[in-house]
Picture 1 (tube, one colour):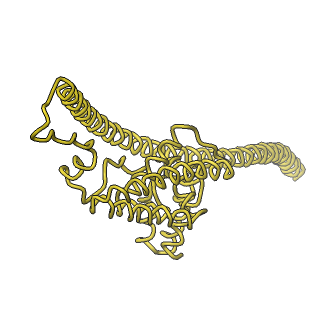
Picture 2 (picture 1 turned 180 degrees about the vertical axis):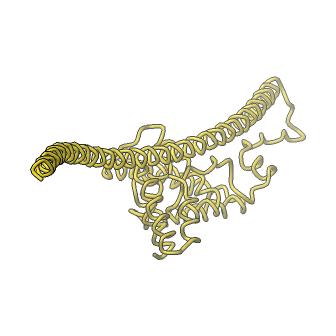
Picture 3 (picture 1 turned 180 degrees about the horizontal axis):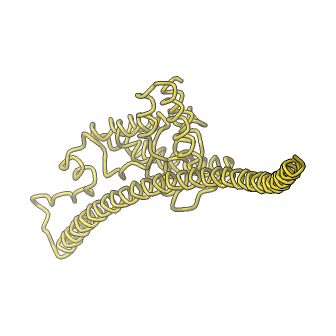
Amino acid sequence: MDPESAIDELFRLRPEEFTAARDRRAAQARRDGDLELARRLKALRRPTLAAWASNLLVRALPDEAEALTALGEGLRAAHRDLDGGRLRELGRRQRALVVSLSAQASRLAEEAGHPVGEDVRREVEETLHAVLADPGTAREWAAGRLTRPPAPATGFPGLTPDAAERLAAPPSPAPAGPSRERGPGARVTDLAAERARRQAKQHGEELTLARRQAREARKESHTREEELGRARDEADRAERAERDAQRQLEELAAELAEAEDRRRAAHERVREIQNRVRAAERAWRSARRAAEAAEAEAERLT
């Protein structure tokens, strides 16, 4: 059994089929003496529904998946170069492609017999954004072996905080010329600009807080999901143990019934032989009395 092929076959399955198939193939690998493959297979975790839909998208639409990873490379380069025009152009393509791929993932999941809801679709979109932002996530996603959605993307690598601030900041108002008097209108403009900067700063802080909370919530969700996976695996093992015990109980019950039949037959045989023994004893006693009487008559005649 080729390890990579075996793993790929597992990740092509629906989530509810994953655990049983993994355990069967791990057991087969152990019987074949391939303990390393058995260990690798047993360590695999069942994909969440969102991860399964993302893997399905990669496998079913490789050209679209390649287009997304290429777009991510372009976006990251534009961020590093602070190329605002290129960022706006690629940003529009990003939004259209993410929406399209998310819809196609939902369609593929439904065609595979497992429709997904809005929460799962949102997790798929977050996965696609993370693919655009991080090359490592992009490689993992392109392999089609996600077991859970990656952490939500909070930006692009290579973009320093001051660069991000320059990209996001609104254009500064043109300074007043030396001969132009700054009247009440200019002061109003300055106040409006200052208010806009404060609002932008507050929005940035709120966005940072929201993203941190989202990361923490996602981390907590992943932790609980892993616990759920372990609990389900333990439940699967317990169910198998129960089935094995039930089968053994049924086998023992069958053996007990056969033994009871043999006991009854033996008991009947014993009663039959005891009856024959008693009849033989009666016949022996009768014959002995007849012999004694004959001997006594013979002695009398002599």
